[in-house]
Figure 1 (spheres, one colour):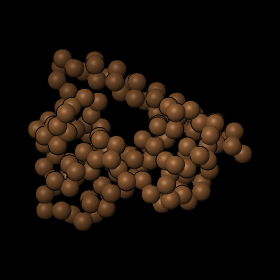
Figure 2 (cartoon, helix red, strand yellow):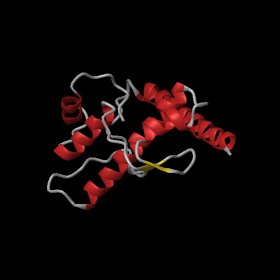
Figure 3 (cartoon, one colour):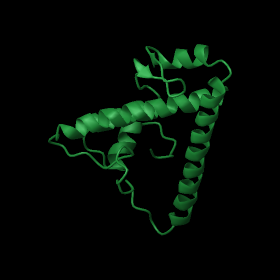
Figure 4 (cartoon, helix red, strand yellow):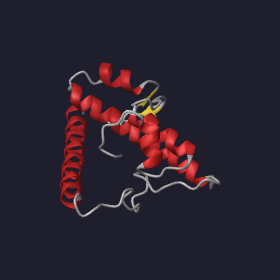
Length: 146
């Protein structure tokens, strides 16, 4: 998702990222507002099927830091949203979808201008490092819980 801090997510998606499909825009807006419904999912740490993952992480993994817990919840939100986007894409909607994070082969949503190429490159490097750190933390937590 776009790292910009915005007030009107739907308008931003429509104008900056040209997300014309209303359903896709709604899914992105839910993700941006942390309003993705998380229920009946497999815990990425212990593999249990849990009805309320956020509550499970808080009560079932007490040794977990708040930042790790929120990163795990954010990862679950992205995963659920990616699944919903795949289902939406499979229906071949009349209003086409723009490429997004749920497609590994997707090109960048906003073409880089010459002024921002270096800035975008540094953001991508930070994002890659953060993903690696999250994976390492999740592996360590899983090993500690065994």
